[in-house]
Image (cartoon, rainbow, N blue to C red; front, side, top):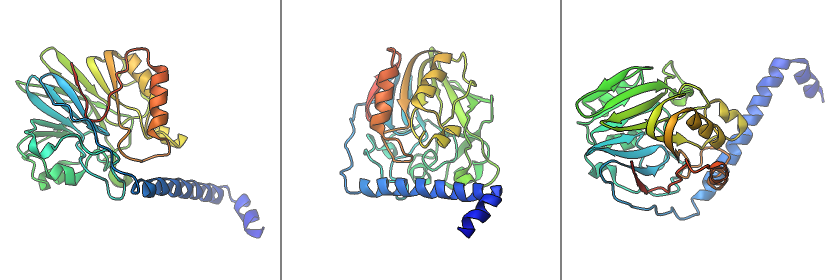
Length: 287
């Protein structure tokens, strides 16, 4: 009782203890769900082939984009993340594919996995936000391109533009390198938007493209909406663009938050007006 009185007398202490209890409760639920996942069989994905002018979803935020024969991979993650078990096997072995470009949206481990990057061919062009040149060089990559907000990379095959995502991209929330990129990828008459990881923003308004890869997971508890979008918010951002198709990603692969993939999928089906193309891990769609 005496402790309760002291806590109530100090609003700052009350806030600290409330935050501690919230985080503890979140971690207990998250750890329990991940622990139970180890007693379930890792699901087999589809294994559809990649072909020219197509997008293949490997899982989470990893997509393999083929634009006129050039292979672009977004946020490559091919295994489990520490004790976060991968729920669905990767549909392809990226180490056996000649990658031309890698796009990294930010430094969180579910988007920039060092073990996965180490396995990939090092002669590709790898594009990342500010702050990751040294680690990418240490991993062996030879062609490192750092893009900040509204900066571009262009060669004879692709034109890649960086936009600012509404997301704190610091690894373990340490240091100053908080930048998170979204990307527009263009080749001839094809244009794809890769959002990476983002909370709701109007930064992408009026972007014209053939297809948008939009995150729809990791939004519960509600405080997560400061850095991630709900399926409804993702769809709202897509509707601000001048795009034909939205492909949901960033779900079904890991347990990183409190919602489950069935809930996310149910919401997507409910709000779909025909412009959301819901695909499975391992599925390939044409542009």
